[in-house]
Image (cartoon, rainbow, N blue to C red; front, side, top):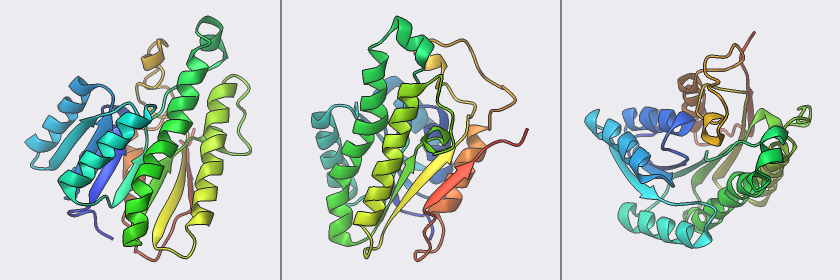
Length: 239
């Protein structure tokens, strides 16, 4: 499968892994749909892509808000005519220490990491079912695996376990169709995930993968033959 001329929707595309993936997909000829809630950051990524000769449009959308999701998906379909790939990448961090000061972060994490991803999927899925074709790629986390230790980030871990369960249920539901569903379980990587919730700079830690390397792995999965499905992918850094 090639990404050339494919319409790929990337949530959380304004920075981090989403930005890295959007740039790589555009380089391969995809028509990239950038989705996030901060317009200034989205425009920055769009301009990078256009400057490099790629194709991209951005849509400001808080995926926690169903009304915004419905409006964004409707506009995307009107503009592009179809959606070939959805990469559910948007996510926020929380842990026990953060929640002592800001217990409301639990709600933000669950609504973003679970509800928002499900809402995007449910709005786009009818189009894919009508075409009997498409790819839903859920960026989850190693925290969503059975052997993970989420002692210090219980809510975050719960949100990722929820997406693991949703991904499996969705894949089972779509058996017999040509719609692919993949669960992606990366370890830590060098993004702004922690800084965005007020954590000290955590870049270049020995356990962190480069976001560009992780984006390469996603591109690899998205470009496998049409009859090949990578159901689950786990990646981490060798230390």
